[in-house]
Length: 121
Image 1 (cartoon, rainbow, N blue to C red):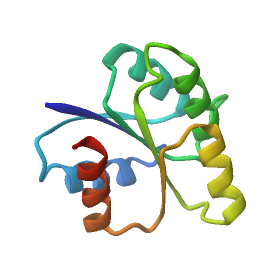
Image 2: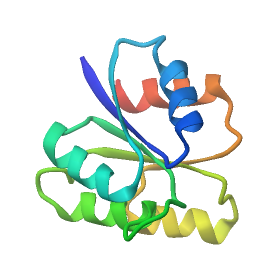
Image 3: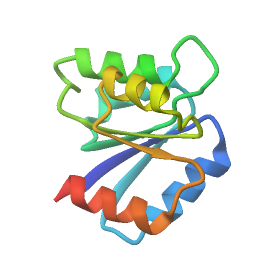
Image 4: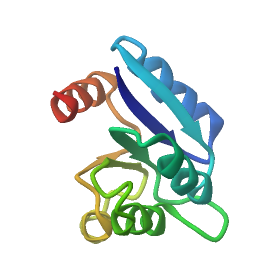
């Protein structure tokens, strides 16, 4: 069973993504900020991380992605940014930080399911 870590500071967004992905046979984990994301990724070794960019605290989504990529124990995790920041400069920053793909909010649940299945197949 593949493991997916959902990271967003808004509980409602985490729950929406969680409910969306329950159609698949995935183990779903959640984190509410960048620090939790990095810690959970190290502990649980998820196959995929769905990561918001704008989060409060010392580590935003971009920094979390950088830390996850630099750590040999988590470097192989696939990362999808799921964020309201949809400008080209934002997308570039996400990919430069280590994202494998980039989705903007609001998102299509069907497209997210398809992307997750594609990335985890």
